[in-house]
Length: 167
Image (cartoon, rainbow, N blue to C red):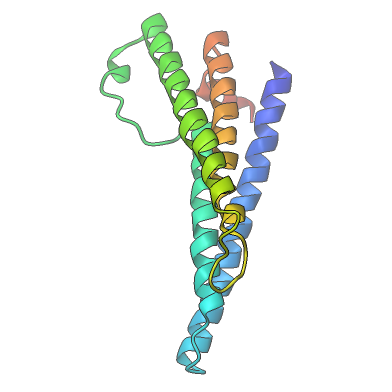
């Protein structure tokens, strides 16, 4: 069990640093874009495209990170009324459904769209769109891994509160 928690902490660390780096990049590029547009009257199309794609990457990676922390938004009107074993069973079913959705839509669908768009290139950056779309199956794989780790924690009775106390 300890190995799985180390894996979770490692993935959390990498994702948090990746999201922070992408956000820092967005601040720098956004500032550059404002300066060249308003002070030099020369808008940059490269910075606009870079901001769009880095925001997309950050949003999808951050969603996987938040899912792993189990801090995502949810409607808990049914789960909050249950306690004990029925609640645990419901949460495991929810994790399995999310794992299926992430695996089928994000991993399988993302892989297909990635392959289809490898011949298209972005207008300003000249990067294949398939490279931009790699974040979809990547975040799907991360969500599936987190879902498996969450199910193992639920089955073992290792709740989020216990995890936070040990960290």
